[in-house]
Image 1 (cartoon, rainbow, N blue to C red):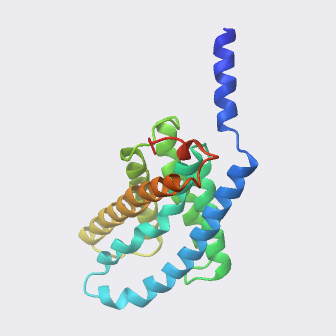
Image 2: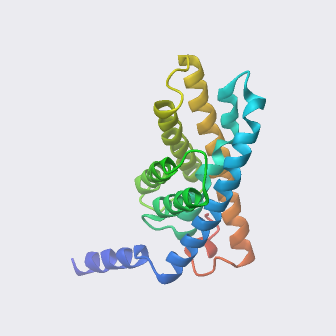
Length: 202
């Protein structure tokens, strides 16, 4: 019984956020928010190129889902995906964008979805299939909101295609790309305060 209690205390200690966790998650989030703002402009500027088949523009979507996955992979603690994605969306809203404050609601959904995936693996498995799945889940959440708020009048086949492209983009950019980014950062030694910087199993 005593040994079990010690194990539980160690687990709680590992999952408790430290000052360095908050600082690094905030840096990831703010950087993500600035990238979001720039990506908002690019999305608007390239819309005409996809006028023949608007769902195809979703290939660009994954960039908006990356901070939540990256934050979770670096910190490896509960709440990291929600925190980084949500704060990034708040920064995006403060900088100004064509969707207004609705991006904050998106940020919450896009953070909760990958958080659920990481929680399902009890914050212990970090190899590529898990962040890839987390990225796809974030994409599903975002695409679902889009269909409710913006694309409800589309044909059913366009809607399905859009959801699949958003999920694929998010899987590749946020999941696979996010994992590669964290591995690259770990190799530089920048992540030494974190388990992700001391482990090959990012």
